[in-house]
Amino acid sequence: MLTSYDFIAAAEQEIKHFRKHFTPEIATNLLFTTPSGERIGFIDVVIEGGGVKGIGALGALYALEECGLRFRKIAGTSAGALNAAFLACAGKSAADHKTAQLLDILANIDFLSFADGGDDAQAVIKLLTLPDNENALETMLTRAKIMLAAARNMNEVMLRLGLNPGGRLKAFLCQELEKLNNGAAFTVGALRRKWRVDAITIDGEQLEQDFQIVASDITHRTKAVFPLDLPDYVRDPNSILIGDLVRASASIPVFFAPYRLGDFSTPPENITAPHSTCFVDGFIVSNFPLSLFDVSDFSAPPKCPTFGITIEDQSPERAQTQGIENLVQLGLAIFQTASQHGDKGYIKNNPGNTVRIIRVSNRIGSRINTNFEGKEGEAEIIENYISAIDFTLTDDEKIQLFRNGVLAVLDKLSAWNFHDYVRRYRR
Image 1 (cartoon, one colour):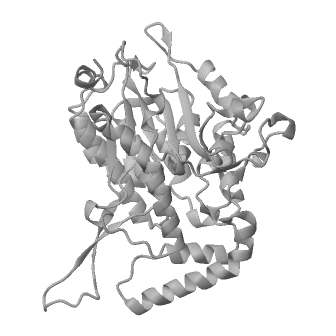
Image 2 (cartoon, rainbow, N blue to C red; image 1 turned 90 degrees about the vertical axis):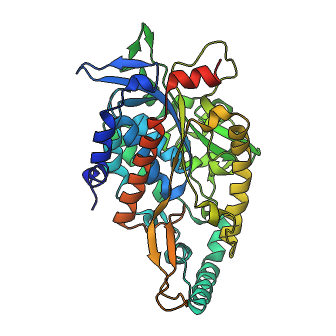
Image 3 (cartoon, rainbow, N blue to C red; image 1 turned 135 degrees about the vertical axis):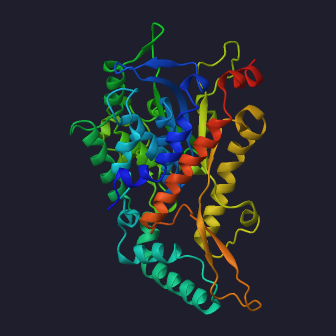
């Protein structure tokens, strides 16, 4: 079983060396001195969805904290929503170190344990996440097994509209968040109360904290940003569980059944929209909602930057030839195209958006193709990339993804200067 130290040790020396030449004043104008005398700076952060690749985002968040930065406003989609929720809810105040605590919670997740649709549902997921095989016969047999397992499970899939009900995912979210709230249910209201009780004051003003996640309301064909949009669905937004919001945002189509408004842990009389309202994964409408905390009024320069954390999907070479060989890959490709169109357009249309993105690689090494039939002495090297649905990650692969996140932050901060950013893009 991995511990937080297993991850931290993998990048400890690089961070220690980087800190010799970096101070929070370079990154932000929102600065604070803790009671212990530590000088820290606050930033806003938006975390892209990416399934199991979210471990790379954890590495980035850890590195930002170790460089003396903390998080004022936090947002995310799908796996990014999960990271954002735990980051917002952990610790006592916004000035606390939180990511080591998150690692203890999230590092040993058995992603397959969330497959609560029975043995056949788990079989489909395991087969879909097998590494690419260069042997044509084995590839054909694998596809045949997937089809057989899917057929056996088709009746239940048709009834609930997904391989898995998602009850285990919700239970995990709610239970772990309760632990962060001294055993009490962690609601939107509980989070807001915590912000008020443990508020930080900078230059005579209270730090304005925020937490938002993106889900897709497919009943009304719209993007739902929670908790912001909760008044459109319930009378008392403060009573809604944070776990419900993350479950709605992380409802991966096909893998999980849609999450209905009636599934929220709230009394029926608190619900004002149709109980049948369906939410699915936020990545359908916005997988990387970088604009969430941005303002259109540039009359006053920002006090801190909004960094976006994205986990690269694969190498540029492979991105041009992404295979679509089964129904799940087709569905994911369609959803990715739809979700990324708006996000990429927003980023592309403003050069200032690109410079504040932290790009985490999902490459975790390489292997030799043992079936390569070249000349004697020749070998084909195959790069290994982690996908969003690689639910059977090894401990070494998790640590490498985490390390990739750390290195991405050090690379970004080495060339980042908030004052230069404001001068070039916000005036």
